[in-house]
Amino acid sequence: MQAEAGHVSGWLPEGGLSRRTLRSETLLVLALSLGASALSSLISFIGSLTRPGGLKDQAATLNSSYAPGRPWLDLAWQLFGIATALVPVALVAHLLLREGVGGLKAIGFDRARPWSDLGRGVLVAAGIGSAGLAFYLAVRAAGGNLTVVPEALPEVWWKYPVLILSAVQNSVVEEVIVVGYLLRRLDQLGWSRMAALAASSVLRGSYHLYQGIGGFVGNMVMGVVFVLLYRRWGRVGPLAAAHALLDIVAFVGYGLLAGNVSWLPTG
Image (tube, rainbow, N blue to C red; front, side, top):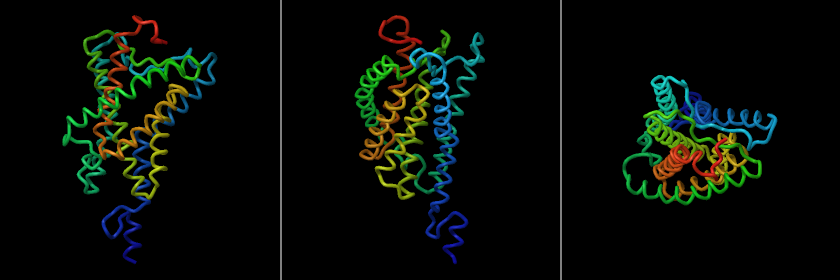
């Protein structure tokens, strides 16, 4: 009778959360963050497919102005968007802290090994970056991807600092939630490692589907690599560093190179 009462309240007698509670919690976290982004991305992709013209003739813009011609208001909106996007990460930290495992430290997102995390991140970014760019250009040329425009911000003093902050925000949200948190919860729910890998990588690909087939497949492959590295290292830190570096190079590099080199599509 005691076990039944504990299950109904959501807590098992030994102090852990029931599977039903863990499942509900995970779905709510995803619904507030990247799960919602995946659904939005699917709707966007359907819209692109049903629009006249090919995918490569359409553009997917990642960082654009919220208030054209009003730079200070635009900056306020940019910072607001970055800050609010991090709220699900704060929620995950709270949930893990409540679990009694030290918050984000439990998934290796802390300052315990900053140089090791950065060094591994640099190596991962170097390996993925060039292959990812070549894959994108090839798939776009074949008509399977939209033209990705990493930034379309006005030429103001805060442009590149905001792009860097946006890259860091993307990396923290994605790696903390889709790798560290999701894998921890799926492990607790009894999923096999292969099933958890598939769920994490397909989710990563899904919320990039707005870019086209190439965005989905490329990010799904990246997701597989990141899950395997997380299983090996037990830390989200190197993955967040790698992701941040990849996005910083993409955002800032596009801002500097767009229109100045012939090989870079500009939409």
